[in-house]
Length: 151
Image 1 (cartoon, one colour):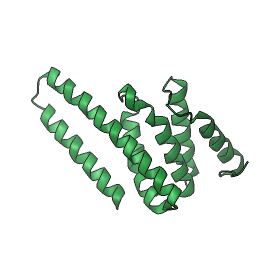
Image 2 (cartoon, rainbow, N blue to C red):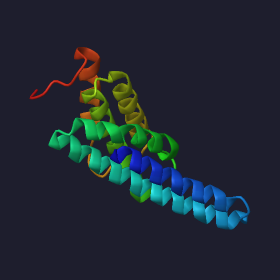
Image 3 (spheres, one colour):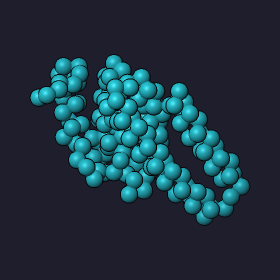
């Protein structure tokens, strides 16, 4: 699946960096880490946009295949992304939650929403407001087990 391809490419890139770091001077290693964070930020943004687009098209299975990898990247890099890319992280958690919910996994949906709201409270302000949407979906899950539309 496309989720497997993304995960494999990400793992290969990470392995390349780790292999190079083994015998590299600290200043060069720091440059690689910074570049790695930029790559991770771009990867998070791309996965988020792809997940949102697939969900809007009704391709829940395809979106569901991407979400575990998206969560893995978010857990590894969500607090270490460069500022220009950090705004996408709360949105990534929101769309991951929506996909998990559509797959029937409300536990991971709640975890994703709580992680995104935690980052927002810590000052990771996205360019486009997503906090109220996250709070509404979290409230709906806790009250009804799903999302209430048109309210």
